[in-house]
Image (cartoon, rainbow, N blue to C red; front, side, top):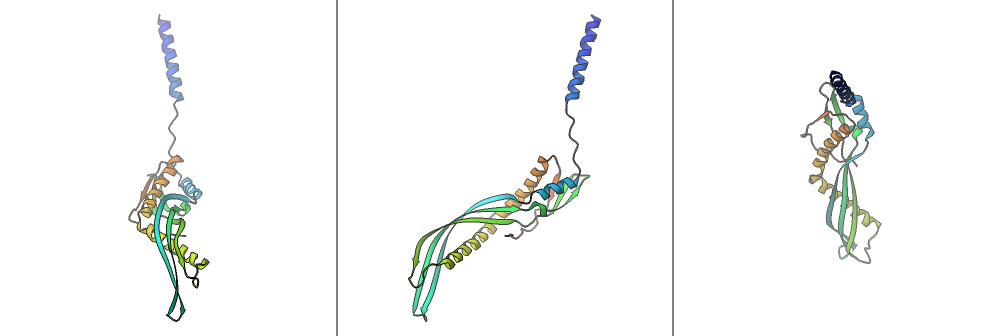
Length: 196
């Protein structure tokens, strides 16, 4: 009976040793700031925000034919539906690392890159035979649309949302690579101008 009890105890001890040995040891924290710099360098374009904008624009052009007595007018109503994206080049993020506390302090974000993809639908095109629509008019309308979109986007919450989302994406990127560092960012940093 004693031998049976010792045998069972020995089997149990071997089983526990096997089970405990099988458990994976926790991964040591990665402390190299060089790996973090490499991660930032590898992501040259990160789209962090998308938005849709609509607008109606009235374009008008008047051409004086003979002094001020005769005028030729053309006009168009343009419906604008646009998609806009804001992206950042992570290789240009300015930051400091503290390996002791595993903290990344973002000093300055790069300038956001705004891209717009407008779709234009022309309604109520009216032109005089002495002042017809030409390529220059369509270029002026495209420029007018782009300027109005820029103003709409700058006054919307898209820019600040993009900055906040960027910090979240940086955190997710580092976490995915097994770099559980904390991120500090001064949210009072002024909103940067768009870079085309």
